[in-house]
Image (cartoon, rainbow, N blue to C red; front, side, top):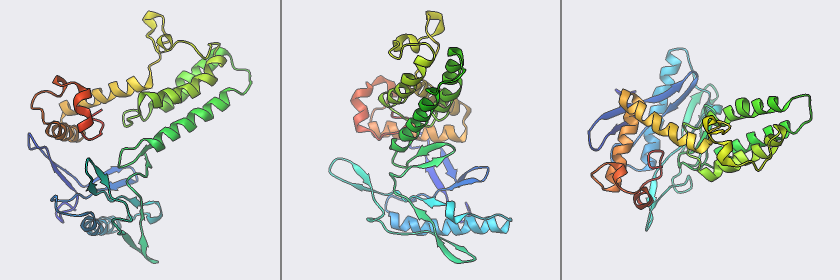
Length: 289
């Protein structure tokens, strides 16, 4: 596929490090990507290019004994229109086009989604336009299910319910946080659903002070971490770790950081300028937050 010119080719704007990505693969899940080579290429042209990449990928799979499930596949096309103050993703109506796969029954259309439509990938709902609506709704549903179950009377002790809270549902909420960008208020709403139901079952008043609930044990707190702050700390940890190991993910982080520096227009370290001054003029991303 690289020989045929398919894939994502990106270069960091300051250090000029080149990164080439053909696909992301995990067991039987695969994500193909194609990117415009110039700023003049349109979304309509990229649909045509992606059709060729898809045919190359499917042909390679079938030649080696594999295949693709068209009914479980979907694709996005991302192109922007600039308005007076910002840019917006073009919709399917503004940018029609389709991808097809040849099967024994003829050509099968691949489902196309809007950039605002989130898809569940490895347990996390991710939308190309970075909206968090589906992931927040999913986490809230998990919290409500747990709240309903823990209210059921049974032989469990207060300690059993505390273990349920800390070692079951909190593991569910912690699982996606490296990849999520939920706001503090969104996490507060999710945790409020859990605590209103779970804390009384643990023998703790539901209005228990958060300073104690999320405080460290050495200061007589419960030792629990607020998921928002854990999320942001893990983002910093992963950023530093991956960049220092020069992994593929680290190179992607480096490219994004350099693009952010170019966008904000400040030559020095990012932390030298107050976040509140420059963040409104930069593109929303994990690095920007």
